[in-house]
Structure formats: structure tokens, C-alpha cells
Image (cartoon, rainbow, N blue to C red; front, top):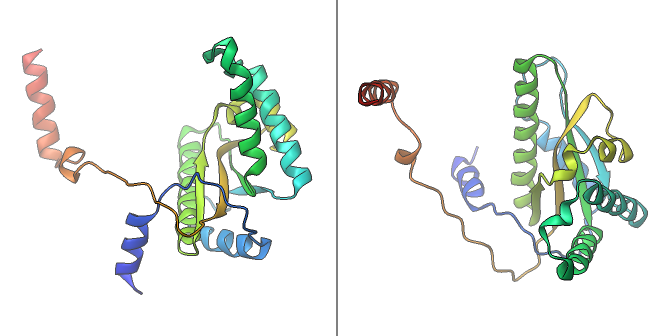
Length: 209
């Protein structure tokens, strides 16, 4: 196992929003999905399900339902009247030109514990997909736009009532050359602490208040 290359892939992976018109075969997508499915999960059954949007007909239907959902949710209200038309066209053109989209879902559970476990497992599945895609010069944008919470949208694109959308993955080849976005992460010391330090800080805060 080349542990250094794994670490390098994790650190170098970026969200790629620049679209390419290069074809990605369904065989490659299936290969990436199979690798992604080795994510850890708590239940006896793998919790992820994926709907593939690839053909022009599917993409047109998908975009139509996105635009209808944006209308239902009044998503254009944040734009002034003058810019609403251009915003609509930009959104419609973008999603229509994404060569392939994956709709990734998880089961909805009444138990908060099981629901959290399902979301966590499917999120790990998505991250696995992003990493193996990156290793093959394929970019992924993980989107959680408002439409994923729209029950009518879910039904119209084939997501059953007892499942929740965890992400819409826009997938496309990375053209060469492309300027990759830089990435910044806060140092570990900014967001980690030993238990004793955390409890001490909480105790001191209580004393001050």
C-alpha cells in the first residue's frame, strides 16, 4: 500500500467547476462507484443508492425539474428583477452542460442514531468517489443546493419518499492545462483539543459567567 500517494491524493483533490466536453464512459463511472462502495457503514445493508443522469434526454429532464423547483422555492427572489433572467439562464445552461450528474441518496430513519449513521456512511461513499475520480483526472463538484430538500423535486427525479438526497455530484473530465484552485485549511491546533484542556476551558468559562 502506497500510503504517501493516498495522503497526497487527499491533500491535492479539489472541487472542479470548470466544465469539459470530454466523454466519460459508463464503464469508468461504474468502476469509480464500485471503489467508492468500500466506504464503511454501520448497517447490514449498504445505505447508498445512486441515480445516474447522463444522456441528453435525462439531462434535459433533470434541468427542467431543477428549474421548476427553484421556482417553487422562490430561489430567484435574491436577484433584482433586472438580473433574474440572466441568473435563470446561467443556472439552466450550467446544469444542462454538466456531462454527468450523480444523485446520491441515503435512507431516512426515524432513529436519530441510524439516520446519522446512514448520512455519515453515504458521505464517506461520496468522498471515496471524489478521491478515486481525482486519481483518474476526473473532477467532481458535490452540490447540496436547495432543491435536494424539495419533496416534489425528489419525487419527480425518482427518489422515493423514504430516502434523502445527500448530494448532487457534477462529474467531468479535467482538461489540461487547467489552473487548479488553491486550498487552505486551518492548523490542527485551531480545531482540536485534549479532553482535559476542553473541560478545563469549559469550567473556566462557567466561573467567569
